Length: 91
Image (spheres, rainbow, N blue to C red):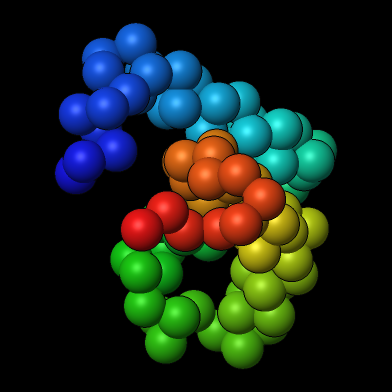
């Protein structure tokens, strides 16, 4: 919460914008038919993989791997983290 107050509205908007750009870049890694299929599978599952057939679950995993969500999470965290300098956390 302190970080948001220190950044102010412009800083928050920039951070959110950087996150949106990173998410878009990862989304663009999929071809349009792959994106459409991913959306269909997510809608069909309703957030529960058990609502999908085994083949659909495998397909969903493959599509999610293509998005590289781990790297996206790292990028988002780096955008949101304040810069602390070479010695890490301030005291």
